[in-house]
Image (tube, rainbow, N blue to C red; front, side, top):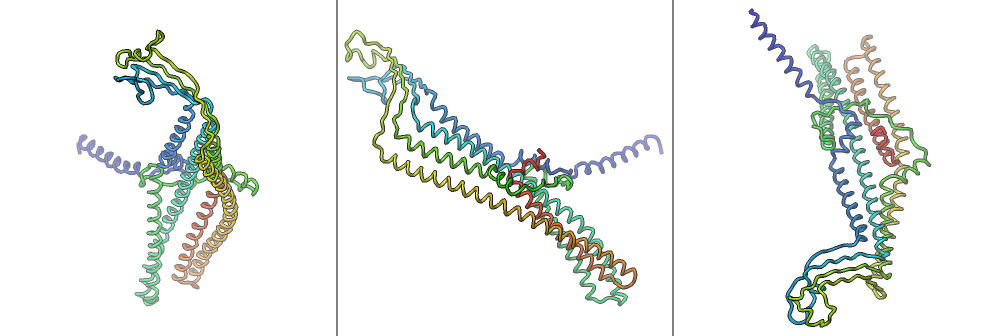
Length: 437
């Protein structure tokens, strides 16, 4: 082989090796739970919706706040007149005019402004609650995907053993040691594991799609890191938990909404109080189009005119406003009771979750002990097989029981994790735990 041929062959080998390595680099990469949560908070559509709601509430607050700044309008009411110059839209015909107005003393506007500020705080708290919901959905989906991935790995090992047992049983049937019924039972064991694998793969695919939509990562590139799930913090005492419930975004949002409704009701009552408005106007009047000089025959007539003053109103008789005030009072009362109900419900839910966590811990411990017993039972059966006091079917039954206890242990562990995450959210500690802050 010539030197050039050797170089070509070597290049082909290098290229083949590179082609083998490229797909490996494109395979799913391990993503920690914290990274998944951070991506979800940036990419989730609920985050964008919350931002839009906050901007809208902030703009509504600025609209009311800026009402105290004089509004200035520049324009022209030019027009020809016949006879006495009549007004155009409430103003005398003019070549150029400037109008300014703003409220000076409106007690109801200050109450409405306070209500808008409370609405702004309510929206912000709702955004925090939605943020916690996104974190909870991401964490639980991630933890559940870990469960199914581990189950798939375990079942793939189990199906290999079950298939080996099935093959051995078929040989024993040919030798006349086992019956056809034994062969059917062996096939049933394999079929059950295949069903479990299909269930686990389906659930894992659905969870990857969910995490993909939350985080923006391709579903086929998501691979979990079980060790990245942090241990839950020590549970709070009952008193500390009840105090933490009051500071949760959901409860605070209900309280702020009640405050906003109270301020709106107050504004409705204050609207029957006297009010003062600032008003000013400057206008340049035409002497040719409207002939003002014909009707104001004095030496003091001039085309430049200005007016400045205060408009005072005394709304002493307004029955419809009183009815609106009564309706606003009822709305404020309802909002206050809803806030109280939200606080009570959150306290009850937290207490329930505390007991659920304790119950799930006990259930996990029971499942763990049953799994350990099943593991030891498999070892015992293997020892008996070596001694000739057990057969292949006893081992198959023991392994099947071990697989079922493993699945039960996984389910109990995940239900415990779910309860712990829900409890963390109800006591306002979910974000700091998930993000490590």
